[in-house]
Image (cartoon, rainbow, N blue to C red; front, side, top):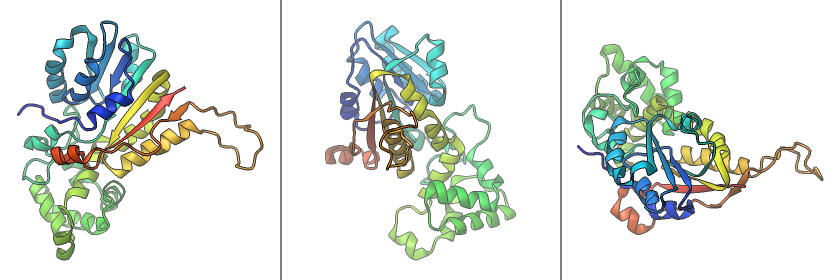
Length: 311
């Protein structure tokens, strides 16, 4: 199966990046190269586009898609948490724009052997970087009941987290949990039938929680935002597309803190903490997909775009 992933909020993202034709742009989640292609079309011979992704399938697909742009594009297999190091190896100290399109790609969800989907019975994998040794199977079979509960509650925001964790531990005492199908049945047994009938797929939140934990998604995002803002040239923009409330909250909080970092008590007549604003939030409210885009691409429904501009 080819790497297919319809880029979400494409026109809006390219518009908010305010492309300088001779500028340097970085994509921390290159994927299939959909956003990258749109940006590269606006660059001239002096521009540069650096694409970073940890997924080998994404690297191969994007390399093919962006081949017409030749030396304009540099693609690196890495995690965006290493962006500063990657750019340093390329001799780049500051950039005009950075893009992150977070979450799991359509390709990863639809490729059964990647083990992201709860809709089919397949291996418990969920690694975004397949060079990583630990898989979802190790988490499901190795975490303590308390660790499972914490993970499902915090990252899945599932009110049945305690019962799901308990059922997982009970099931694995009988035999190792090896497939997504086995895990789905265990989760179903932990959720009251009335709730299962009313809501979405009962395993969705637990699978999200495992995926986030395994790939350190929120940790990497939280630890990387200040550094990425620091890489921007004055007037440079950081555009981030999130797909669930946990990611969006981290981005929103970080952008606000970088815009207004002052820690002085509200009553102080003048600032004495010495913390200076690093820029401004361009999107006071997140940019959402149009109804048309949501009907064309069901995975766009939960997308939110937030933008920060460096001073």
